[in-house]
Image 1 (tube, rainbow, N blue to C red):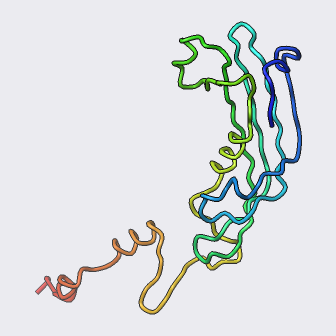
Image 2: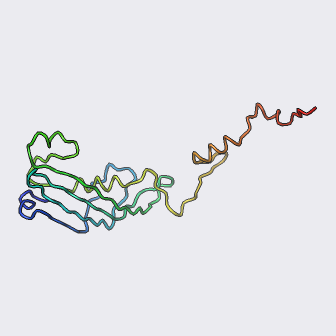
Image 3: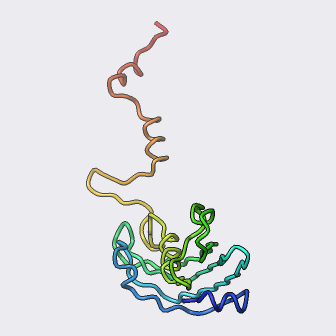
Length: 171
């Protein structure tokens, strides 16, 4: 999605709504990524003439197919994300030094990389399919949540003091 400064200056406000074809190669370095399906994007850009900036609102929704963090099986993950980005075409030093404003070196805005970043930011750290078991166990081991581990530690009696439980102090 490429928008030129000239288009923004002429129209003032531009809005797009489309189903985007994003290449799987854009996610090559993302571990656990399998594919992206049904990616719908809505974008609006508003040109701020006095400051020579483009205020951009980006909305993306779709379905990612990711590897389960437990089993590596494919899991569909629906995402819906928004982001507001401010670009400037200006050489104004005040705008260059603002960390919230992205300085463009060309006379166009290419939103493709920002869209990919928005999608990547929506991916959770832990991906588990609905049909996967709640807990994982093996011979003399199991995976516990932090809460369950803390509860077991609290309820467990230290074996060094276990004999004291049988001691009758009333005698």
